[in-house]
Amino acid sequence: MILKRFLIFSGFLFAMTMIGCKGDTVPKPESHLRLDYPMAKYSSFSNSSQNCSFTFEVNESSKVKMKQDCSMEIGYPKMKATIYLNYKPVNGNIDHLLRDAQKLTYEHVVKADDIAEQPFLNPANKVYGMFYQVGGNAATNAQFYVTDSTRNFIVGSVYFYAKPNYDSILPAAAYIKNDMRKIMESIRWK
Image 1 (cartoon, rainbow, N blue to C red):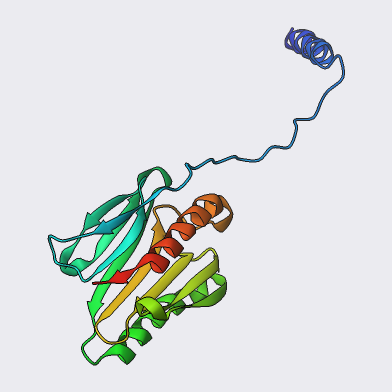
Image 2: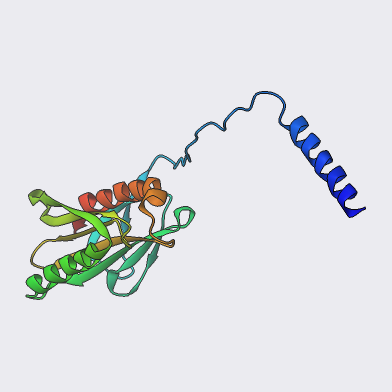
């Protein structure tokens, strides 16, 4: 009795499989995730409430949150990312500040595939610095520092609120990296 039911069920299952597999099967086409971000529009940012000694241009779609001592967070909620800008006054300690900025970048060498350094010089506005591109699954993929060598020093780095997977965050990382370059290139000392 059980054998008869099993044979009927197996025959029914075989028949349904054969009926369901009629026709040509078409493989699923290959596709890629498409992430479109708005065209960046920049406006000048200056914080006069804390009497900060610098200005720069910031993407209008980001949100700037002031911290103490002219440091700030520039948030990108849709991308789950934040650019952290830390301001330090130079008081005869430029060597120490430079070492700390470079150390911050090279702490990521364990997870990074490569770190590319790009010097930045703007002698007309007395802005000098370095832009770092960190490749691979590091916690940050871009950092920079700028200084006038005598009074002001700013370090910037971007962090995503997600597990570092370079391939997944690449479009957002490229977008924010452009914003970081704009911040770096547009800094003006007061």
